[in-house]
Length: 331
Image (tube, rainbow, N blue to C red):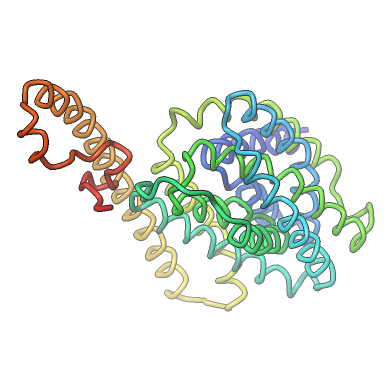
């Protein structure tokens, strides 16, 4: 009972993170299950089965808060499902001994990517236009495959790619990725059912993760509007890196002083990423304040200036045309 309660709390925390960042439910849950000694295929299968319920609840909550772009969902979900089914089939056919370092390596890489990604501001200045299917289709295929083989990865692959495009509001990126993940989780679960059979799913674990995730889903859809993703992403990335480094170090058979040296290096990198994330967050907030203050001043000047002055005056960048550093971005 104590173990199931802990798993439920993990599911709750993982869904809060996922709903706020658009990523890391699978990464967080799978990492914990691997540390607990669960076989990689069973861990990924159980997490994806639980995600069917949590992503459905998250999708409904995001839809009600207006965080979903259905055009993006329809174009990314089907390729994602194909990739997830293929990844689940592949992972089911690999032995546990071979799959453990493979899965830990994927999770470690994605955790490191989170650290790097959230240690610097996201550019959201390229506004306008529509995301094309030839971009969304391959993105969904790759993200779905990585998600199933690594026990997580749909969000870390899909969410940053859509954010960097700058053509969607961050809250709609997160809401759309979370909603499309319902289809991806379902396809992965079917793949694991075919490859492992029903005994491949740890049903008590699934139930505990599902309960925690369902409780957190509505709250996460609301938190996405107020939680600083910059800090949350860097914090989660460091936890994932350190926990999966344990499996990789053991597979590499590092002993003696090398093992603590590696852990110390990774911890230092995590601390540096957190410091950079705080600085990036402050710069972004400062840029928004400056842009907000500049807009009324420009309007007042324009109302006092004559026609000749207006013709000669340079254009003032709007808040969405400002890069994360606060520098006007040329058109």
